[in-house]
Length: 251
Image (cartoon, rainbow, N blue to C red):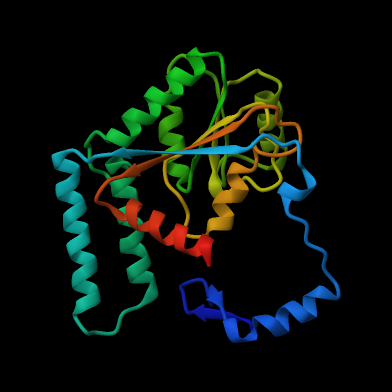
């Protein structure tokens, strides 16, 4: 009644709101719900600062990316019946290729991964801790094996049960480790206020999901100005996602 949905492999997926019905929805919710903005309640909480760092693909990575892009456009322009799983699969591959070609079996160095490791090393050497967010648990696993000179924890859909995740958070909060690798989708309800720096290697299509992840640092107990860094691959789906996310956030 209030949501616009499209079919997907996992069932109906909400992609927006039926704007003409929103006044009725607000009227129904006003009777049973109180909403307070964090800025109004936590007036002493330091602000968040955003920094977007552009990254360029190397020639081999760009070649493979363009081949995947051609496949997607060919699928969209054939005029044949298009299924959501096919489009989603190709879109996911574009995201993976712009992030790290090794996720798709291509042994090609990723400029984004190289920059990520450089930033992690710089932050750790400065005596601070850092949180790394990605949508892809497989990427976090890959990065964990390549980190040098630091101790890390991981919280993702592939990193153990609830007890293990809680212990990982405690070790990070108490200073036993200085890098937290976190999946964007599994960070709800986890405090990471011992760090005031987080970096997104990629984003998810839903703005609130991303904000909930970065707010693991920006909550009660945070003393510093939280720096949120985005690594954005130029001329790729990364840029398209940033445009979509900004438009959704302003809607």
